[in-house]
Length: 167
Image 1 (tube, helix red, strand yellow):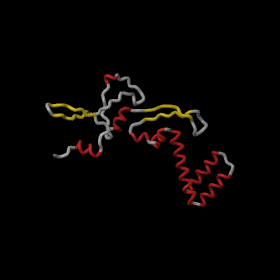
Image 2: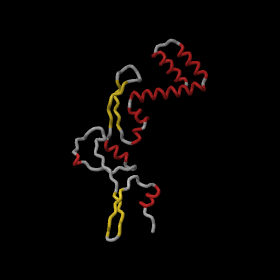
Image 3: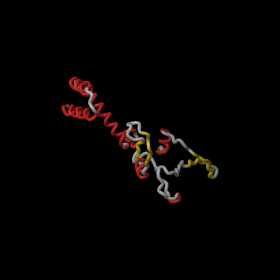
Image 4: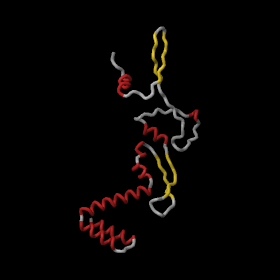
């Protein structure tokens, strides 16, 4: 007798929950398995749409449709965070929206918060500049001259921009 798919899966990757019961049919005992179904009733989107519980429907979720279900829920978070980047404001307003599982990755979160994105872009630009300094001695000496001069921030920015145009 050929193995069915469910038996192959059971051998290779057994399910975590198996609920069975014995049924007596005539003189024979038969083992029946109950499907394991979990229903979660919660406001996972972070905002209530006001729909009554009795009107809500169960949604089948698996690895193939997880992003679609997440997008339909429109989960979001809004909260203030203490500003540790600069001294200009007390708090940073954070508004995060999640449409797929990839939106939970750190870089996706950074891209959604303006202050973090700006700081990250500045850091990337500095890393690129440092990489150029290591291979270009003229650039390194020019930057040392610019930094050693006691210039205001605006003058320093102007000199650096002129220097970057030469590259």
